[in-house]
Amino acid sequence: MATLRLQPSNSEPDLKRPRHSWPAGEGGVFFWRINQANYGGAGSSAEALLLSVLQAFGLRRVSEPEGSTLIWANCFEPKLWKSAGGCFINHFPRSVELTHKHRLCANIMRFGSQHLPDSFVLPQDLSAWSVCLQQTAMASCVEAQSDDIADRSGATSTSRQGQHWILKPGRGGGGRGICVFHCDGTAESVENVLRRAEAAANAKTPSVVSRYIERPLVVNTRKCDLRLYVLVTSFEQSPATNCAATPPDGASASMCAFIFTEGLVRFASEAYTMSQSELSNACVHLTNNEINARNAQKSGPCSSRSGNWTLGALWRWLREHRAQDFEGDPSESANLSSPCHAPAIADATQDARDAIQLAARPEMVWQRIRSLAVEALRSGVAAISKAMGELPAEGRERCFELLGLDVLLDNDLWPWLCEINGQPSLGVGGAVDEAVDSAMLTALFSLLFGRP
Image (cartoon, rainbow, N blue to C red; front, side, top):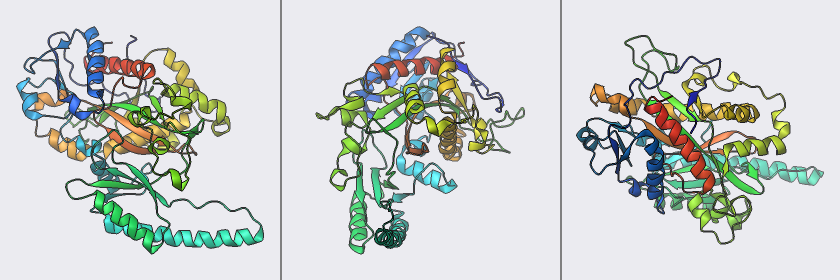
């Protein structure tokens, strides 16, 4: 497997490798409860894939944490980590600030976001959501009057949007408990959706309701989303700035993260429609592999077990079918994100062949995605950094986090954050997934273990 190279753009300062590396081959990898974090046997698949990759680094599976080089767990467990002597562990304390949907939503909304639709955490934001529904109803009423005037004058009117919402459990995965519904703004409709959402959430099991993206990017009639991998090696705050410039000696390091340039594109298994009769059809509105794999009527891009695309395949499709959107597309688009956002996350690429792929991808879209990733990660820095401060100083540099960002592109190719997975499924979607995930893990461990 080719070695990892970091390729920040020319406008970015050099990004440091992790400040500590551990020689591989001196211990093993201890797995802890990863099957409890995934569904449908995905934990076993992840374990098998990890072991096959780690063999190249001289690591084998061990039955006890003591003396291990790496712990791969479903969450950060302080006692387990300390008993192993502070080895590498694949989580930071309090990373649930990013991976639990209700915490992520609350954190991002606190700072404001260009990449999160109108969202509310229930039940605490129930009143605020009710006001939003009423405002949407008033706007829809005005729009309806305009449409009526347009109809009488013979002008072409557009369909009203913004009346659909998606409700997700604050925790969990596998597409469970997610539903899409319509609210036309009438008093009865508002009351019904509020009652429905209130029944689905309580203080112990909060939910997140978000305005539904009604015009997503559709590929060959199917809705799709992106699974992007991000490695975070530091969540510490810089004392003077949010930029990722290397701090002076003795100062606290900035958040350090790497986004992998290859990822996965997942598809719904039935043609996309906003028909009211299909709102409850998960195979139209959700791209989760587990849900769509069970669909006996599936066809199109995901008609086989290997139906996912690589991110590179999507870039090629866009260049072929949406070429007009990329006329004059710059090779670097620093103006698409604020100066302090652009340097905070670096592209991690595999080998020279990626240069061909990178030259063909829409840089405009990629820079927006990078900005989304930084925006999301920074929302959890304060809480995670505080929790890190309670760990022994000599062990803080051995925490890392592999995050799976689920991103939806709308029809205007603007990226929207769906959620962040703290234990992303690995190698479960067929040959494409296994190839992408294997290359990503090889790059990840090369970085962590300091191998070229």
